[in-house]
Image (cartoon, rainbow, N blue to C red; front, side):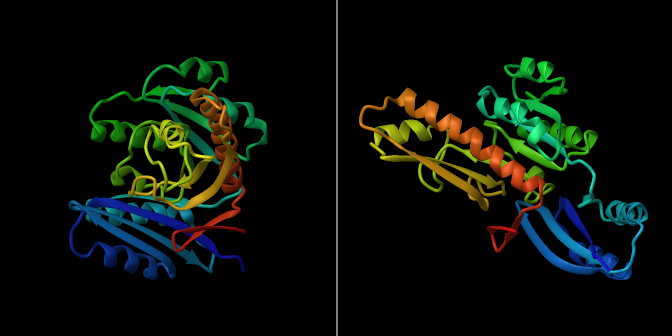
Length: 278
């Protein structure tokens, strides 16, 4: 009989007994813990449990009872399980349009639905309007307030995958831990070289002969998450900074789209911080 796999994320104030409370709950429901990952940063606790059930399980009942455990221990808990329904995608943007445009132009080729576009400013709201996709502005300057709104938006649209399409904000563990291996970012360099927003300028100034891009899953460690795909192009002596940027932006968009497609068709698996293709 096919196993039912359920991912459980637990986020909240660190205190004793949290791990035991949730693992014991799973065991009481005749489940098996297949993966467990936990972190504590500055008093914030985050845990991801991947559990399996051999016998048929009432998912809705399981989730209701799980929330009772969460309430008792004052933790924010969410679940994720693979079903054959269309997955909901949230695209986070700032003002660069190339990655969003490629995703929108390829909607019919994506095994999922772009349910919402979230922007730190209104620059790309017209693109969302033309595509008839809701656009939500989250421009709070204080990151805790911004992430609180982001969490609400993702819950409202029942988001399965978050795509950072040149989103120029750093997400904290409080957000990232809620979507383990379900946030994909595109970085304009071959990580770990030339990190940061000025990657193309650094490559140009250093006379780099090859410039690349990296699609990766987001973790609490900036630009250090599991790498999904990387691609590159040659730099000619006559290339200007602008020509390098244009080539790079096209490659960013194409590589990000490729990563999103592979994720949505369940062809990617993260093991020991490395991405494997199924």
